[in-house]
Image (cartoon, rainbow over all chains, first blue to last red):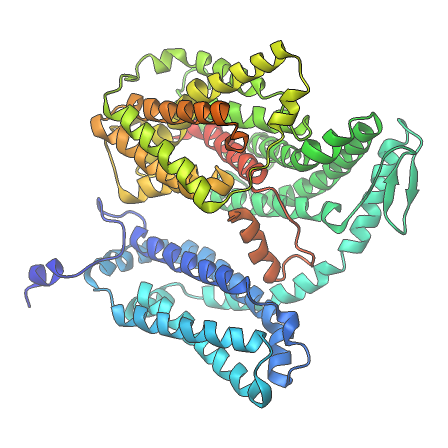
Length: 556
Length: 48
């Protein structure tokens, strides 16, 4: 058999490139598989509510009751299997991953998957629409069969049965740990529901104690209403602090898993409950501060920006502090003294590319937290970014900032895409800017608009292009990103960095992804970041004109 | 479409969070997550 001829007519899924030292092809396919399942689940779940199945026959009733727990078990099994499997068989998985390049894609499995999921979607509508009549249990049975078929065919499409067999043989007892996690997870989740009520009660008392030195509190433990004579809030389950603890649990577990060589186990595991406890306490400080701000008269700030931002600021501050301290406590850290890095002599190329963007994000969180509907402190974003850019000016002096004629053309094109998609998507035109500015005197109004425009045209394009095209695009190709030419390009890196860029633009994520792709193209054109910055600056300048000329404030 | 809102919806239907599933501002969440990710990358930037 002529292998080369066979290869020429076969399409392969997986990232090509230099010889693998990690099972990248296999990892890529697992990520694709997970993305497909999550996407399908999200699309279907919008129409599915298991409560609609109550009282419709024994099998349907069981589906309604056990469905969410089954999903929890599947997620737990997949997560634990991937983690333990990779840990146990990383070396063995590399050749298995490499052999994937020689196995042709079996499109039949994809066709079968589409068919199964089509049937599954149709039966879902029938089942959850309550129109099954006397055949309810039969429909439910076929629904389960099509669902299982959908899972199996997608699995075999991305990971061929022979490869799957090899993976299972090499991952040892990972399946047993995963099965145990799958059984235990629903039990823990149900048990955790019982924590919400006492957590709210404890949070109520903590906040009351924190407020005691400052104000005379008025509270009712039954309704969970707490505050003063002029301003009070109700502590809802989502304010109980358990979500923040969950975030710290996930962050701590990922951190310790990723840097497991740097820590002494099992003692390092103590870091997780410490972080969770601190997060719970910080949440009580957040609610107490919110009440004090509202009591001081800034009701819109308390219920607006502070309410939505303070929790994130607290989590970020704690997570960063936790990560820094964890590395420096000798009782926990396993880093050798010789490995301690002298920050004065070792370069940190990442900082020059990310700190300006971080400065904008940090300033955005702070200015949003002290704003109501209108971000009056927006100039802080410009000042923070300008200061960060100034700090790394020596590094930037070595970067080629020149740009050619294509940059403004690409910038104009992105502008057209941006406003067209904004119209097509029908994004709500809500903005507090016009009303906020109208209440200000003319000089303050002009100053705010000048800073807003300067930020959009100068600091934001530089900071975002340094972060997404200069850093992330190359970092997705190599850890030693700094040594790569700006013309290096893999589809994974371009799409990954563009998707990240798009997601940061909230409702306008599609336009953001397209913009990211086009700016990456601008950079690749002559291998200069200046072209991407100029294109981005032109886009933002045109949007500024569009906003100021036509009053389209929602675009800001 | 609010990606993060949908992601939370996904978590909600998986039953990890008791109802009602909280609504979050996707831009706030995106900003915070991006800041944390950048900060951690910078903190580990000297380790290459």
